[in-house]
Every structure is written in C-alpha cells, then in structure tokens.
Length: 375
Image (cartoon, rainbow, N blue to C red; front, side, top):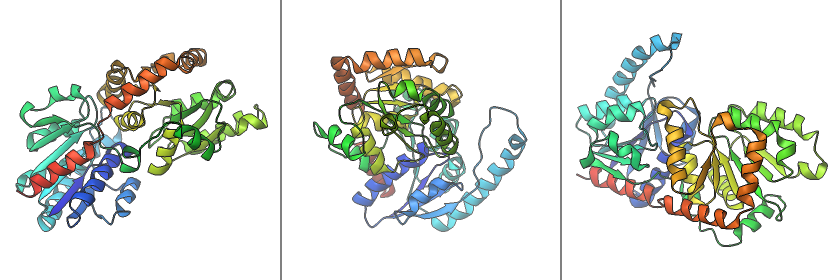
C-alpha cells in the first residue's frame, strides 16, 4: 500500500501528521509512506522515519495586500502542475491531508486521479484549504465539534487531534510530577508553570514573561518554550531581566526555543499549570497530560479560530481564557494565585482536560486511511 501525507506550514500541521505516521508505521509496517508539501524546516521531522519527501510550491490565501499577494496565483498554478506530475508517477492508494499551504494542489490532483482522500481539521473553525478540500474528500476528521457545521454531515466524524505517541501514550502516575520536576532541576516544593510559545513563537507571550520575570518568579518557577522565530530575542530579554533576581531565583527559570516530543512530555508532566496560546495542537497536548491552563488566543489568527478554540475548551472546565488586552501582570498574578490556591478547582480542571482529550485520535485516523487505501 502506498500512502501519501500532505499539509504543512507550521508545527500545527506537521505534528499531527507525525502522530498519524507513527500509527501507520505500527498498523501497516509494509506500507510505503511519503510526504508531499512545500519546503519547510518542519519537513525534517519526516526524515527521522525514513519518509520520502516530494516538494511542491505552496500558495497561501492572504487576507491583506502585499507584493506577495500578486504572486500567489502563479505559485498555485505551479503547485498544481507539480502535484499533477508527481502524483502521476507516485500514484498512491490514499492521501491524508492536514491542510495548510501546499495541501490544496495535492488534494485536487488526487481527486483528478480518483485517489481517495481523507482530510483532518484541527481547529474549531476550519482553515480555507480544508473548506475547499472537503468537497473532494471521502472522509473528514475534526478535533472540535464546532467544526462539524462547516462540513458534509455524512462524511464527518469527531476524532480529536492526533498527538505524538511520546506525549499521548505516556502513563502519568501519581507523584510523577514531583520526580520530573526534580529531574528537570526545579524545586519540588514550588509550583512550576510551563509557558508554550508554539512552534514559531508567540511574541507577546514571550515578552510578557520576560518583562515580568521578577514578579512571576515570586510565585512560580517557569519552564519557557519560546518558539524558534522569536527565541533569540526572548533569550536576550530574559538575560536582562534575570539581572534583577537572586542567584537562587535564577535557577527557577529555564528557557528553550524548541522542545522535542520527549522533552515536551517531561515538561508537561512536571508542570502544575500551563500558560499558552490556543492553537489546537497546544490545547490537545495540554489536555493529554491533564494539566490546567491559562490560554491567551492569538487575535490575528485566521477566522478567529484560536479564540473559539479557547472558549470551547474553557466551557469544558479545563482552562481559563485571558484576552490579550487583559494580559496585565496584576490581573495575571491574581488569576494564577486563585488557581494555584484552589486545589479542588485544579483537580476538576485536570479531570476535565483528560476527559476532553481523545487518546485514540491518531489510531482512528490511521485505521481509516488503511481501509480507504485498501479499497
């Protein structure tokens, strides 16, 4: 069986593909699996699994006018032509798409060749690519129930968001958080807040942490994942801020631009609370560990999907949402104190997070891919 994965743009597209790939490797070990998408540093993730990569031009619908906007139609035409040729020679039995730049030409050309397509939408409001591709897909998986209204009912199913097995399949035992806290070099007697800047980097969240580091370290220890793009600036800002704290407090702050799946799993296990943007990938990884969270939706996110993600998750009782305009240190510290000082609320939020998470998401999608590819 030949299986083709497509999608790309950010870790939010690639990590779910990796999660499904891991399941496919387990369920169909003899399958030939490849990836087709735009050039991206994230494509290196596939090379770890021996997946062959086919590059095509990626085009993006821009909601603002720039010189690049004029080039997008030409990039789309090039992408369609490349996908047409590569699919002709590859001719997979099934295509699995996560949307994003580069996925649309692959899905359209797969439909042209009568190759069955499955798409997955991670957010509560579908991206433009997946909305277009839904008409050409045999089956559609969604992570949030809200997204169902955008797709044909007869081929749409709520499956959750695929999470890498290093995170999703970890059995977290009672008291393990203390052990992990010590392993990561933190004080086991003080709360640990994990800050997630996402795969690219949440600039305003990073700045909020570094600008208020002294006040925050009075209340919590911090494991800060900055994201690759803004990592260098965040590191510089943090070093300046750390001059104002004691040597003992400096040990309570750790920063890294990127966390591997294993490192992310360790950090989630050790943390008492998570501070993050509201991308679907982040929400489901937090939920998989059963951790309470404070979410700050990205205002500029397409279709305002992060805001809807966040409030949908908050309704489950697993998180508290703070709008970016309200992200002031006094308000944040008050919220943090209220949560950490209420053990019963923390326990309920943890239980709600675990209930929201769907551990078999990657497995379910892999099974559907194999079934469609075998027809």
